[in-house]
Length: 458
Ligand SMILES: Cc1cc2nc3c(=O)[nH]c(=O)nc-3n(C[C@H](O)[C@H](O)[C@H](O)COP(=O)(O)OP(=O)(O)OC[C@H]3O[C@@H](n4cnc5c(N)ncnc54)[C@H](O)[C@@H]3O)c2cc1C
Image (cartoon, rainbow, N blue to C red):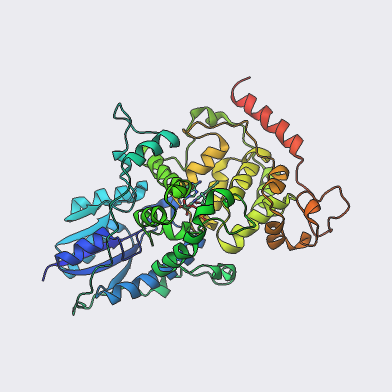
């Protein structure tokens, strides 16, 4: 029987998996996951994602075993390990989904030189290079890109889970998952992650929980005190559920009312569209003008960065967001925008510092989505950005009814009334345990506008 290898990366699922389905159709399939910290270099997966990966691989190994497919774990450079393993098992082909992070693209190119690679689409709604404007060029701005993407939608119907086959008799050496040390210890800071269930079944359960509230998504998605969004982002990032599956379920459930949710799914793909065009998008400004931006550095800026990262800025909504991130590995989108804007514009700290912090702390850290959103908030991106638009945390907080959200993550001020909790300072109600604001909004605004003028040479 012909032997096939399936290379899993950010597609840790069994349903709607074109590579797995094709490999199982073609013979005896073996799955492999390679922990490759070499290829991504500075963007090796962060601490929070290592926790997720451990549990997601545990779930995948079980799900694949039910199909008669062993999951082999290896560590090292992707192309080298693939070549070694393919020769060990005598695989005729290696099946994989196309990925768009620059290190995955390089690894695919290298693997193609060494092996009979079969690269499949299907991990995204559409190949980024297939969405072109009338002149045959790539888009940089979301709205026209999304309009064009919709001309290609709906995506193909998701593939079912393949039928089980007999497990191979050949035993193949695999690393022990525990030996990878993906879980934190001394200290174990993952206690707050128990709200998550990594793996394909967890992804499906999250989708089932979300579909009944999907029709209200547009109205409630900006209110972090309520459960108004899907919380699917880590599942989507790790490919535990395919975007095509989400598209079809959402449309079947809510029809036209699914549009706003589907556009968010598309925002993630737009991030990959940008990274595919600008592979250094997480490292360099989209607009060269920003290379001259006078970001703050030095001890005072470092102290401010630490206060931001630890949720000790004295701005309740910012602190709630940063503590939610630390405790749960996730943060509500509206609060991500507020905290990111605060770092970049109130504290004048380079957006790349924030991108790095999020990269390490987010369970859903995604090269495209993270870089695109940070550059968008900073105003340095290629997609119609504006630096002078500065979010006012003390206005955003009551506007989006964040009192209960703040109570959950900033217990020092949980006893305050709704009309006090958003901006407690100066009202004689703040307990000594809660820090004073590290800067005033007015002063921060004046400083940011002066820096922006300096950057433009005014
Ligand atoms: C500074 C900053 C950094 C971010 N970094 C990431 C990141 O590393 N990874 C990530 O997945 N999202 C990132 N986002 C986008 C967004 O905050 C999260 O995707 C969203 O909060 C996830 O929650 P959800 O699954 O409930 O989303 P829902 O509102 O239910 O949306 C469904 C899905 O659409 C995608 N999505 C939603 N909003 C966005 C968006 N603005 N940009 C890109 N994709 C989106 C996600 O895959 C999400 O799971 C970032 C946003 C900001 C402002």
